[in-house]
Image (cartoon, rainbow, N blue to C red; front, side, top):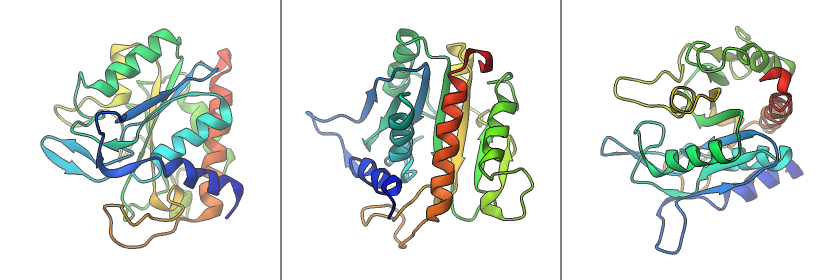
Length: 241
C-alpha cells in the first residue's frame, strides 16, 4: 500500500459507521484551513433520511480530510452515526456549522463529497445544479478531471465523468442538498461530487453496512485524490472564482 492510500485509511479509521456519538464525543468535526475552500463529507457514517437509516458513503470522510490535509483547505466531516441527513433536511446542526464556517472564514467555494453504488456505469458524477451553483467554475472543474484521466463519454466506465445527469445536486422534491443550500442561501459557489466505490474504498472495513469484502483500484483512487488536490489549488486562484 502506498503512503497516500495508507494515510487515507488512517484518516477513515476515526469514523465509526454504526455508532451514535456519545455525550463526550462529536458527531461531526470541523478542521480549519488556510485557503478559502471548504470540503464537506456529510455522509461519512450511517445517517437518517425521512425516518429511515441510509448506509454510509465509505471513505468519503477520509477522502475529504486527506484532500484538506494536502491543500490546507477547510473541512467538515461526519465521524459518527447521525439521526439527521444534512444533504436532505434544512436547519440541521451540520448545515448550521457549515454556515458559520462559510461566513467566518470567507469561504469562496464548497466541494461536497459523496459516494454512489457499485452498479453505476461511471466513475465520478459532478452535480452543479446544471451549471447554476457554480457557473464560472463548472468548466474549470471538468477540465481538471480530464487532465487526470476522467472524461465524459470515456469507454472505460470507471474513467467516465458524468456531468449533471444522474446526480445533479438539484435534489428531489422536499430535499435541500448541501450544494443548493450553499449556493441559494449563502450565495457561495458549490458543487457535488459522487464517487464510485472503486475510486474511494481502499479496503472495506468489517463494520461497514455492506457485507461483501471490497477493494478499490489503487491507481484510480490516487488519480482522483490528485485531481481534487489540483482542483483545490486552482479554486484558490481569484481568477477562477
